[in-house]
Length: 227
Image (tube, rainbow, N blue to C red; front, side, top):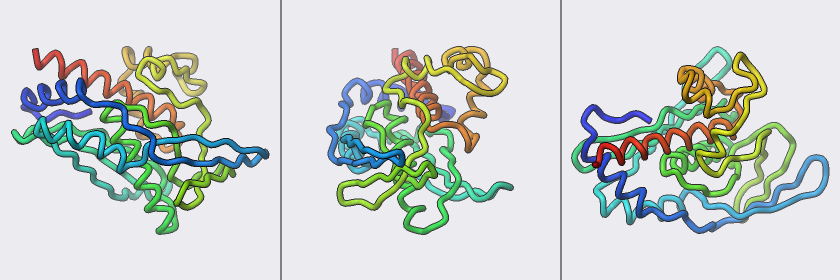
C-alpha cells in the first residue's frame, strides 16, 4: 500500500473503519465443472456486495472508494491493470499497488476480468475474506457456471489463504527463494515481494496472500499512527 505524505487523518479513519467493518454475507453462487470430471460449488460475495459492506462504515468515517482500470503494453502483450484508492475527506489517501494480469482478448471476457480484479483488489485492501472465485478467463479447462453470469475458468494452483497468517505460511516452490515462506520474504526481501506482485505468472493465491499481508501491515501502521 502507498500512503499520501500526510496521512494522520486517514490513518485514524481507517483504524476506526477496520474495527467496525464486518465480513459481507455471500450473495452469489458458482458451480465448477472440473476438466477431469465431477464438479463442486461454493458461495461468494460479488463486487457490489463488498461495496455495500464498506459503504456505510466508510461514509461515517469520511472515506470514499475509487477504482481505476487501464491497460499497459508490454513485450509479452497487453496487461489489464486495476488500482484501488481510499480517499479521505481531508484529501489524504491510501492506494494499492497496481494489480496486473494478461488482458483477455474478447471484450466480454475483458469486462469480466476487470470486474474480478476490482473485486480482488478491493477485498484485499479491506482485509476481508469473500471466498474464492474467478470472473476472469483462464486456461485450465475448468468451467465455471455462475448464477446469472457467463461461464469462465480458473487457473489457481495453490489453496487460497483466508488471512495474513495463512498467507505468510505459503512456501515458494520456485526461484531463488525456493523453500522460503512469504512471511520470511516479507522480512528479508521486500523487492522480491514486489516482483511477485508484478509478475504475470505468479499464482493468484500468492498475490492474494501478499495483498492480505499488505493490508495487515497497513492496519498496524494506521493503528500506531492513530495512538
